[in-house]
Length: 141
Length: 133
Image: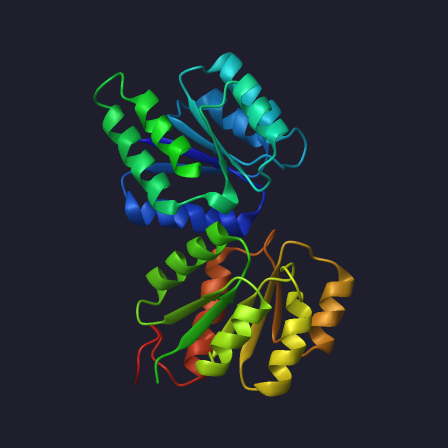
């Protein structure tokens, strides 16, 4: 079963996102975290495949949290979903090891959907993950 | 009469995810989208909605100003202000401009929104899924 986490302090967006993911992929397990601190706690207890990460969060920002996640759990794919599409953010996302950076404004839900589907398949066949993420990055361009 | 809802929100991704969620909850609801006040007014004039979910921060006129204008022309339409910035000034303006509800995106749970929308639909005498009686 694919295990994903949505790290986002805006409850409305987080829940809408989760509801939608569950309608598309009812067998996916989705955990919600309202801050980076909460996200790290979850990661300490469970193995996640995929993390959707907002940048503006209470406490440490999503880029810092991504750096921490990648230092400890390299196998977890982190997709940054940012409200602000700034070169500094994109560069930091790459530097800190995020697998993809998607600006919320150019986000296409069907591409997220295709990506999640890809990750779900990759659970059974090792080596598919990089192409799953490329799919998401292309979708945001 | 099919229940018609308009989403006035400049973020495409946010607008779409709200639309997908609402459609899932209320399959027969007719959902119209507008990215700013100009588009909203064009669509309201041709197809007045029953309910508007209104963002505050928009390009051009903000959602509070728009609410004032819409309520002047269409007093019967229910307007829910949905904002990321919950400030007393916004709340006061929302009341002054006759918005029906003021909700903060940061703290409102989606099932509360669905319940609210459902109650508005039922008040209008339409079936709960948004279809005709």
